[in-house]
Image (cartoon, rainbow over all chains, first blue to last red; front, side, top):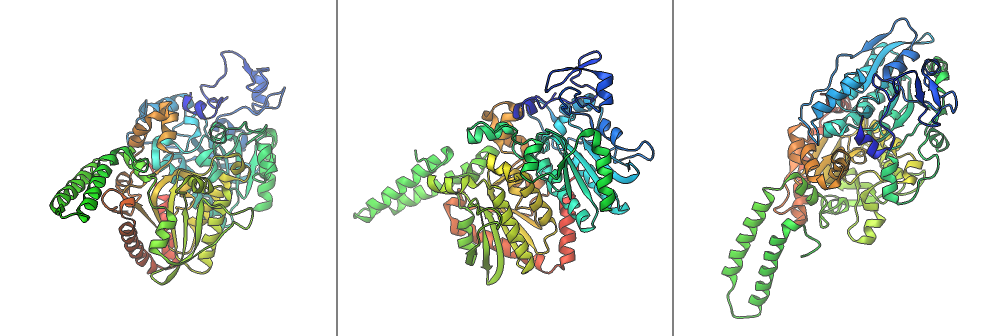
Length: 282
Length: 315
């Protein structure tokens, strides 16, 4: 999918665990990093982390929330919101057709899934980007769902956790997608003023308009190991500065060193870490 | 062909050069060329009108980036008085791609912030082609918060291809700098009036453009990605920039139809660069008008209305 994403960030167009993943038929999956053949039932048990090299494979939004939240008391929020192609955007294909394919491939109506629930007994709202839906790009529906998630938090005085995985703003929604940056930042500012905790978790990859809005505004910013996170994509930067990018550039560890994330958290420790942090803040 | 003018402006420039020649000849001789000059002036005006009334979105994008187009500092010198430029983000450095400071608008103290491009090659490099780095956005934030503390209304001017995509910008947190400005501006307790004077390039533009009123010059553009960027991703080649400009609806007209823009400021015939004083006078009148409408609101009303405005963009 998403050949246009591959163009800006090579190798960005795939998600494991989505309905149509880059999983070959059968029970074996190749680790995209070390190429080791991984046994699917084992991989699921290890939360899609490679047993050989510890690479965190991309997973679907629903899979992530499924692992994150306690089994009881989960409620999906704003689940009926679906995109309208009000401006009839068309490039080499119609936006409407791209949406149709994305829905079929990911099984989602748009690129954000939001649920209210608990993590180790701590009540919260959790949002997760679906990278398999047009590269997790943010348009009006993603912005509105995030807005409603935060509003639920404001109303019920609960914390918000958001797992981002996105190529940025959705070009096919033109200026309306840009305006989602200020919309999500504005509602987060309301949460900040009401002293409600917001934890942003950066997962591979986060760029552009999502990185430069909701993803960088956590009271605490966490990152999964080796996630690629930045404002401009590596290829755009390379073309601009005409030099080779340093090793590890824009990876989680780079962000930690430069002071933009608080800690790097392994997927298997995410639940415990989030509940531990949130218990101290609320 | 003059490199200072766009291809579709060339016939106008040629005609003007002819008029100028006739004037010079007329001055030094007994010949009365007034009639001929007047005829050519009318022709030139009609030609300009006809060319500028049928500009396509991509043509408008090129006018917005015109090498002679007035920049933020040009408007500051025409619209405001007593401007004291303030420098630096107090953390890393000073970014010449964003200028800001305190000034007076009709005698009233105000804060002014804008992107700044350079005119000649040396200045272009010095201003980094109007592409700010994190320290530029952090300087802007410092000035915004100062404006709030001293209750100075904030006037911002957008004119950037986008935030700088470079290694150092990433190291210093370009994303964080932009995101933080969006959050701070959403709740800044003074009136904020933003004008897109040239190019409104994506998040790098919005980072000083969260506002109570958005004005756009007639031939300014505002978009989520540059037409070339959009074309190279979706059409696989930057050569389809004109198609991308059309599809994204980047012009003041189209954005006004979406309800995003409060007022389009008419430009002089042939674009802002043809008569900067006239352009600045038009803009100044609009800025004062919108400020007066906002000045009567309580801080609470102002912030409520801004919040409604920011969160209304749905499907």
